[in-house]
Image (cartoon, rainbow, N blue to C red; front, top):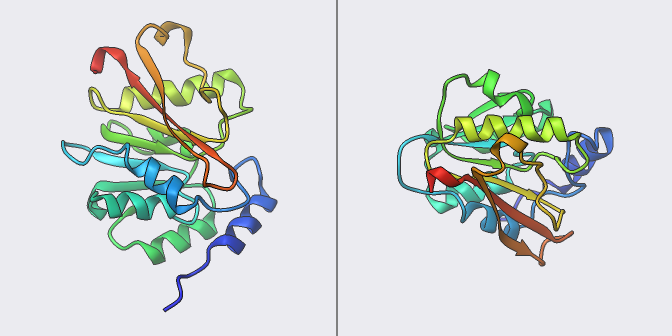
Length: 191
C-alpha cells in the first residue's frame, strides 16, 4: 500500500502563510529521526511538539517509543490539526499559537519540547520569550530541541540566562531538502 503524501497540503500551507509554516515541504525521514533521537524515553512528563505540521516528526517521536498518551502537539493551522487528529489517535492535539504554549498548557512540565516553528528572523524578544518559556516548562536536565535551516543557534538566549543555558548542535541532516540543523538547548544547572 502506498504511503500518503503530505507534500501538497504542506506546500499550500506554506504559500498561504510562510511566517507560520517553516518550510515548503514536510521534514524528511532522516531529519525526523535525528530530531526524535534527542527525545528522552525515560522519566516523568509528556513530550511537547510545537508546530508539527503534517506530522513527520510526530511519527518519528512515536516510532522512537514515546506513547501517544505522552505526546502533546500544538499546531496553528486548522487543516494540519484535522490531518494530525486523523493520523494520530491518542495524541493531544491543540490548535493554537505554539509561541503561547505556556498559556495553553499552564503549569505543565515536560520531559522534552520539540520545536519546528520558524524562529529565524523573529525579533530577539520573541525568540527569548519562547526560550524562557521552554526552559521554565522543562523538567530538570531536559532538552528543548529546535530544528532549523540556520547554521548558527537559531534562538537568542536572554542575557540573564546566558550563563545558565547551554546550546549544542545535536545533528546536521544533509540528506534533508534543504539541509537542516538540530539544536539542543538545556539549562546548565540542570545537566
